[in-house]
Length: 129
Image 1 (cartoon, rainbow, N blue to C red):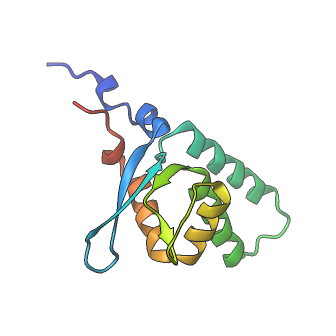
Image 2 (image 1 turned 90 degrees about the horizontal axis):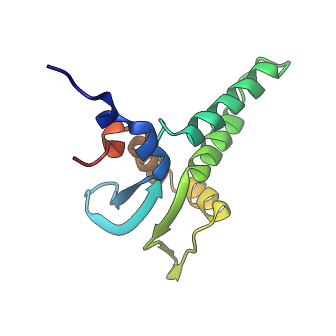
């Protein structure tokens, strides 16, 4: 028996993106918010991660700056966001942009955590059967 590994090529689908249906952080209710994200197996994600790691290695200081780490994580998630729908804040629709993604992911930790978990879950980026 043989298996064609191409059927499990998560890198291609991860680069195309998959849609997260955002859930209420305590009830799990679908909030009607959809965010299209690329996965951690994508070339884009890997390139950004490599660039960050290289820059970190080149730093003369080996001290860990937790605020900088958090900002870099938010930047990475924002760069991996391809679009969204259904997001409003204080009654106003929030247009998709990198800058708005950074603002929302900075302000709403629970949202950032959902995005991070979704992107890291390869099953979200497996090709459809």
